[in-house]
Image (cartoon, rainbow, N blue to C red; front, side):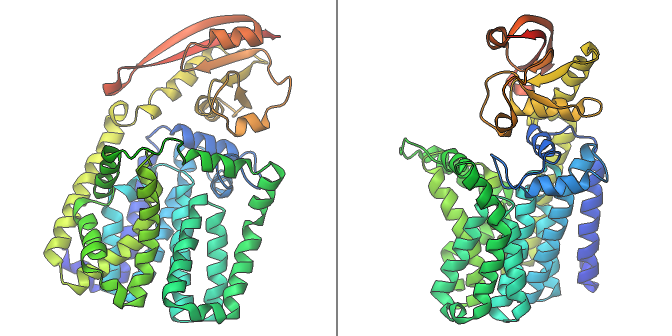
Length: 464
C-alpha cells in the first residue's frame, strides 16, 4: 500500500491534503473554541488596519469564513485553508528542488506531525503566517534561483501578506537577507528586488500607519511580551524548549533535521540547501536565545518546520533513509493520533482552558432579561460570551484585566445593567463600578489534573 502512493505522487499528495482538510473540518465541529480563537473571531466583526495584539490578517480571513459559517468548525475554516495551502506550497518547493516522490514524502511528513495537526485545529495568527511564510519561501526561491520577474513580484506580495499575519514574519526577512548577503549579493543589483520591497512595504503600510496613530502600541506590546528584565540563564527552561522540538516535529524527523544542520553541514556547499537551512536556523536560533531567559511557546517556532519539512524530505531521498523514514512516520502518527484522541475525549486533562466555557455561557443565558448587557472579566470570557450567546451581542470588560483590544474599544460610560461572567470572585471590582451587585451562580467544572475550574455569574445594576 505504501509503495502504491508513489505510482502517482502528485495525485497522492493532493488526496492526503484533501483528506486531512475534510477530516479536520468534521473533527473541529466537536471541539469548543479556545479563548484566543473566540477573541480573534470578535476581531472579524470589527475590521481594522491592525489590532493591539497582532496584525489583522487572522481577522480578515475569519471575516470571509463568517459568510460560510459562524459555528466552531466555521471559525476554524481559516486554519483548514491556510494549512492546506501551506502543504501545497511545500509540495511545490520540494518538487522544484528535487522530484515528485521526494515532494510526496514532504507531504507525508507534514501531515503526520503533531505540530501541523494542532495547526489544523486551533485558529490563531500562526495559521496565515504559515501559509504566507510557505508562499514567501517558494516564490523567493524561484526569484533567486530561476530569476523570473513575476517571481520577484509574487515574493513581494507573499512577504507583504506574511507581515500582515504576525510580527514574527520579520524573522523570515532577516533569514532571507542573511542568505543574500552570504551567498547571492548579485540579487541586490536586480531592480525587481527593489520592486518586491516596494510591494511588500505598500501591503504592510496600513499596519505601520495604525501603529503610528496609536503610539506604536502593538509593537511595544510584542516587544515587552518577549523580553525579560532578569537576564538569568535557566538551563532547565532551555532543555525543555529543545526537547519540545523533538515532540512537535517528532523525534525521528527532528533528529534527522538537527543531525544535518549541526553535524553534516553539507548545506554550506549547496546554495539551494543553504537557502532552506537559513529559513530554519534563523527562527530556531532566535527563539532558543530568547528561551535562555524567558519561556517561549513551542508554536512560535512553527514556521521553521516549513523549511524543515522540505529539508528532511530531501535528506531522506539523498541518503536513501527509507527505513528511518517509515519509522519516523509511524512514531509521528502515533503522537498525532494519541493527541487528537486526547483532545477529543479527555479535553479537561489536556486543554482545560477550552473546557466548561460554553456550558458557563449557557447557564448565564438562562438568567438574561431583555435589555441586559453582557460583560466578562478578561478577554477570553468576554469573547466566549459574544460567540456562544444567541445573536452574538456586544460584550465588554467589567473588571481590570490584561490590556487588550477591548480596552481600546471601550469608551467612557460604557457600563450598563446586565450580567457578568468571571473566572474569579470579582465582588471588589464590581462593587466599585455598580451600586447593586448580586452573585447569581457559582459553577464548578472538573479541571483534569489541575483540580477544579470555577465560573461566577453576577447580576449588576446601577453603574456608579
